[in-house]
Amino acid sequence: MPVQTYDLFAPTTEAERHARYARMRAEPGLCRIAPFGAYAAARYDDVRTLQKDAQRFSSEALATTAEPPWLGPNPVARSLVTRDPPRHTQLRALLSRAFGPTGMARLEAQVRHEAQTLAEAAVHQREVDLVDAFSFVLPRNIIGRMLGLEPSTFTGFKRWSVNMGLITSALPAQHQDIRDTVKEMEDYLGDVIAARRRQPGEDMVSDLLRAEVEGQRLTDAEVLSFLFLLLPAGMETTAQLIGNAAILLARFPEHLEQARADRAHIPRFLEEVLRYEPPAQFAFRVATSDVELSGTPIPAGSLVMGLVGSANRDERVFEQPDAFLPGRDKASQHLSFGHGIHFCLGAQLARLEARLALEALVPRIRALRLRSQDIEWLPGLTIHGPRTLPVELIPA
Image (cartoon, one colour):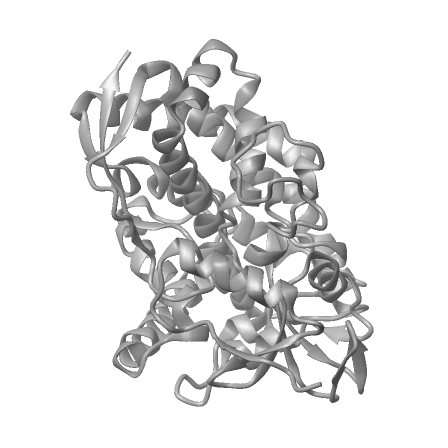
């Protein structure tokens, strides 16, 4: 039976995108993606297999997608997410301490204070772009401080973050700006590494330079690859989670009321936001040998995409998948943070920041109104969230 091809890059509305995902889930096997011919898994079980089975589906795929011919060398291609065991296991252990429960407990007071300050200022303005005033600024400031970066440089991080997220689906007109971004990040972060080598501090860059893997220190190139991954990833997942949450608070005001009445509703609400509008839409892998998935033969070396946005609405797993139902059964079984050894290292931080963001914003407002029903989404397909979000915040 021939494998059906779908163009995920064709302009579309949100409703059309999810209707297309439903058609892909109904196919007897995997699909192909135009124009570059990757295989695509749309069903939940297939996406979870891709994320979990590192022996058959290698994460070195990201190295391929992070370095298209027009871009050239990109440190992300040599980062944690592109490694398979055993090197992945060694490198992940270095970062786990910073993102584990102890590290999160240390950060909580700082995140809460930042969220309260930003929420107070946003509500005082009343009409704001919530991305620039709140949803992006909060994780940007937190990851910047975790890395010990100079606050005066934070304003450039948004452009870097957006451009790094565009690499896998960039148009030719965007290529030069992305090349410039990689060069700017290499120069900036290289200077930071050199400064910490001369004078270590109490920050994550210094911690990485002090760290050892089986008795060996990390090289400057390895630390740079970590920072290329951490800086955008530390901002984007959380920024889009908060932004998507704000959109859904506006569209489903009953959940704003529930959250105002009972703060315990906020984690349930956020978990459903992660399922319903996942910030990261795709997971890339490469077949390590000739394999078969859902009856579709996949030749060795083939690029395979796991469509997380489709898997999270698979009717085989989630009842009423297109309904927004916080507190639903299997609420935390979404695949938005991955599955298996590459489960997102920053998942706890993203949940912490998003929870504290809503705990700061929700009590201060009695309504959140979108000033336009047409959301300007981020360009590209990999990262999903609002590029701008003009809202009116009605004070409580």
